[in-house]
Length: 340
Image (cartoon, rainbow, N blue to C red):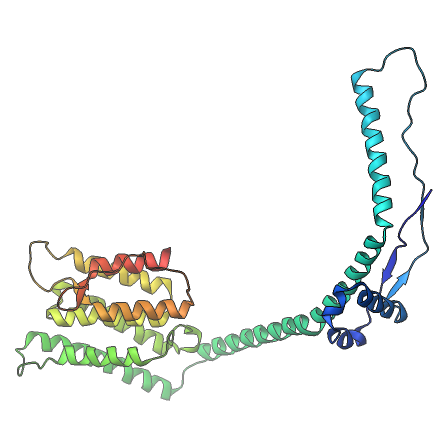
């Protein structure tokens, strides 16, 4: 017969969580400190000792003296039974040692402290997170309900003005390509796109990422501008080399601000299509874009993602003496950035 460590019943009291959080954690490392804290658990009846159980250690039933020799299987069976009995006895003796008793008390104290920390901080954080997600869900539902409401006459007039204004702007830009420039360095299309690039570059990162907060008219305008810029970037659009280059840069800036893989891959597709129309034997400025513009947008994307990995070995476009880079190399670099 051997005595085992008495089992306990745990019953944590919620109003004592604050006092357990303020306990000195260094005292848990010493036996004296653990004994005091364990005594506190017993005094507060958070740990209740149950009636001690008695374990009857009974060895295996070995065979009596027999004339016949035992088979190998029978011998292995008796050996396994003896080893199992020895292991059970060793566990009982070790669990009844002073070290095991102190370790058990320390584990109970740590369990009580961790429960207090989890209950006081982490659970409330989950509740706040759930409340926040609920508010976001309600906000999205409200936005959807607002978008589904019948538009008023004022909304219709505003939408008509924006749509006609965009159509007029696109028509004027296309007309400016067909007319000779009014003077050296004057190009209406390039000036407008350059101003748009400056505006997009001054926005905080991912300003257009949350499409749920953008009105449907705004999303429609973005779609029209994107379609127009894709057409401008092509060689047969009628725009000059600088205009096509600026259109590619503005389109990449908008895709980065929208923060969606879809728009970035659409830019990669556009860049590959624009570079495919350029013959390798042509010594022109076709199929290029600003190197600094591309790298600034690329670094902004990395900072927005919080990437800390070493990407020095990754592909980067080759910078030309004019400060440009190939659209093809830029497309490959961006594709690696968003897929690897």
